[in-house]
Length: 312
Image 1: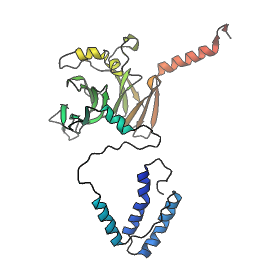
Image 2 (image 1 turned 135 degrees about the vertical axis):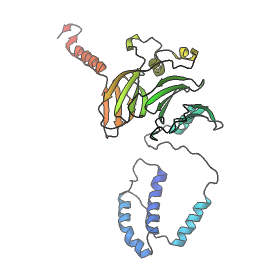
Image 3 (image 1 turned 90 degrees about the vertical axis):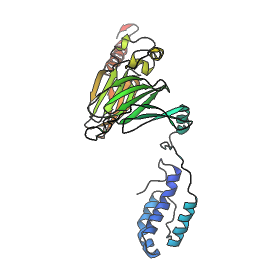
Image 4 (image 1 turned 45 degrees about the vertical axis):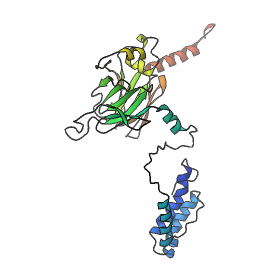
């Protein structure tokens, strides 16, 4: 059974599948008779998947000639390519939009914990964050490795470093937030959830934790509309005016979600409705805001019970 011709795959991949099958059988067949005998089941499987390619034996001389032609077409320069995940359902040019956001720089993280800010013009490092000399750790587990990074406003960068996370200002080089040992194991993913009310982190320890600045939602001021401002409890303008090397905020654990029996690999924000998580236990779990759901149920019940003329 092969990938069907009507599946959601790039056309170049679908085109090369029958050619690769033909080449594989030819390489393992000594004669054309052996090829014809062995290719029957492959031809049937290829036909069922919608391919019109007829498997044909290729002699050694023909294969050598085709390989030489492919060698002539090889690039002699070292070129870096970015291939976005393919999907026929996506109409947007993801690569173009992504690099448009990275007109000046982009960041990369490493197993040694180092975060490098690169210039898109020269492809040279412009700034380093979180450089460590003891990056291997006592048991060579690399406790400061960078698993995930989240850019914000094309200036700030939140990175999952080991079992904690940090927030950096890529322009000034300051570390604005640092939280050590936010989980018992390394953090796999982090994102703002509930319209920026919390920073959610998920870890190999199977837990999801929600972080904030400690204030109740109703105490937030009117300018708290951006997720970063809501998380820090201050406006971006106030953040830019602050000086010093100390972190501006100490993140407070606001809640914890426990249901996965294995590591949690990714989170998806669904606004005030809640979040979705997926883990190594093959489960996809939808987490709802209990308080919001209670209010929605009460509102729906009131609409059913009350009307403009009174109770019915």
